[in-house]
Image: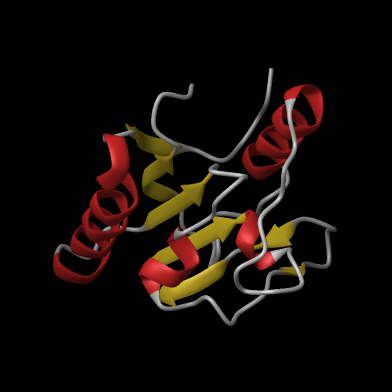
Length: 133
């Protein structure tokens, strides 16, 4: 069982070809308009689009003192994690299947420090590719 910080609401968005814009818009609305602490997790390994949709596509993640990844902040209340931050180029895709892809997704849940300034997330929005998971 994976153990992550306390999250009050998990939201899984998979809405055909528009899923990325809906998840990014929803996350922005919750964070910027309502002031919730929101995590946006892009598990579309083959075509990560969330960094571009949130305007942080030129950013990269870094490791914290405890070895966990620190997500990129698109807004003070909106943290974003995507495989797009780990690839060399902005438009690079990762073509992983099976256990390797599943292992990366598990790492996003267990090895990302979503707490930021010590605050728990109110919402974790998981953006998946259409027809998956």
